View: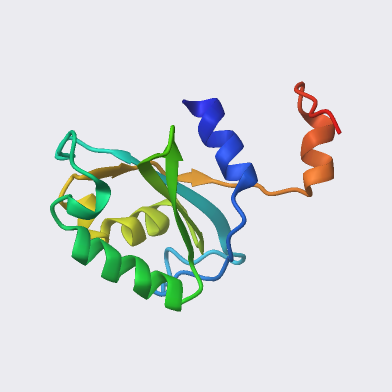
Length: 138
């Protein structure tokens, strides 16, 4: 799963901006960091029910729309044609601030989805592929 998440994070083509909630002075960092927050199905995910019919979907959709309007990247993730999670990419002062941002999503507070927060050190794709042991054929 971690390899899949890593590859998805690399492949994600999303916009990056600062998180909308300003951190306190003690939390503020000189330079905002980039965070990737993949969502996975949580304990309250209803098996056999599509994403759009899950409890809290309308609130989740409104929350994601709000994030999108602020320029935060958010996209669903699928496996075998079925949406199994999502990915948010944002700039925040620290991991706690990024996690707080995700907790505002009704899918997260309702435990339909579970987030994991990763600080994401992005390099150019050329540099990433040069350092990976896996080579992609042209």
